[in-house]
Image 1 (cartoon, rainbow, N blue to C red):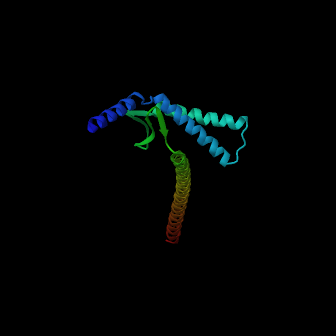
Image 2 (cartoon, rainbow, N blue to C red):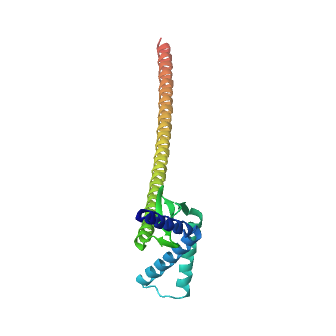
Length: 197
């Protein structure tokens, strides 16, 4: 009899749990409440005064997170309870657990850790972008200097070639002049020799 009573109680509890599993909208509401509390707490910890601008900022953050939850939140229903998760970095992150008509959400440390990790990733991406920009700038400068050096080398080569051509023409001119003078001297020597005969 006691075993039967135990089975009946367990069955009743299971039926009660199945009937009181919260839907995904209740999970979203509970998470948004937890996020709003977290944002308020962080603003207070940072000493940010509560004014219209602060409330607008909080509302913007809350709406952004709500939009992300609406598009990325996934529900796993296990009949007597359900969970919600979101995929971050190819890993399922459990956000809430629902049973007996209540939603138990993540703790504030998990949210803080996720936000800090996101900020760290953003800083790393910014540093990587800055590094790539510096590399591109250095590469551009190196190519510009190479082009400048090549231009200078070609200019000097052209100048040497021109000077060599000029020197060759001068040599040819001198050789032609020397040949002309030699021929003139020979002719003069022949004339002098023929006059002497």
